[in-house]
Length: 418
Image (cartoon, rainbow, N blue to C red):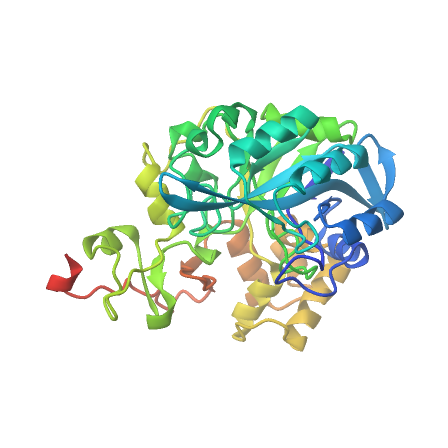
């Protein structure tokens, strides 16, 4: 059976998340999206953990059910350490096989920070020490870096990241089998670096709400005879292409940190232009936020286009709401008309992912207008152009072939650039 999984979510107890986030809203959102395996997130938070225990029913080994949706126990943690004179702040995802193991994890992590303060706790400890502790608890625990390339709070981030997994996790890097690529990078970007060839690339939404334009916008697709924690874990660790079919990605240009820029001055540019002016904003001369594309190119040892022999395939999509919104010219969230059009398609074809992945153009135009149908097919076929995201701004898809993309903003260098 096919399982579409999103392993990086949050509860209402994490900062900067919807107050409506609950097992009820997540499970209902999963049905709308077309997901059937979700993270039961934030298990480090004691109040939320009580709710998870009271509502989740274990139906398979390490797999829990609520409201017809399967869940796996996960949490995101932040580690903070000083390494080579620089503060390193990295987010990691943890998968656990049981509530008993969760209790042991929480007891250990509670020594490094206040687990009640945030569903995504901040821990003053090195990544290597955390991995060593987790492996002493259970070798069935899976830990990997989240949104690995974003400038802040990531393993390879341009602002406070490391230059390799080995540098981050030290002698414990042997226990790191995966990483989450994040919205601003995709598999082909990660394939440019040979050091990641044996690492399984996961794609998750990091959703801070259960809305379908957030939940499952990135996901992982498995084909399993039996749904158990160990089956999922083995498919990831062994990079098993028979069981791990593909990832669902948003175009990396859609991500908020794809290219280098400075949002305050509305300036963005591709790596070669940013490097030419020493990564300084040509308007205010302050340092720009170095984007994911530039950071990948700094560490890469291959040209884009190389595909490792054991690479997991991927498919590129955009949330249905955003396709409709930009085609309609609203370009904003929470438009009643856009929601109605989105729901019309979902109600007809069963789920958003079915609409995006499978429904033919001929069937789409029976339910929606030709422009929206054409845009869905364009996204499916990878034929959408973008004004790429930068410095916290999401990228903007362009469906009208007559509209020009934004050119890099570059001025003549001055003496202050050197």
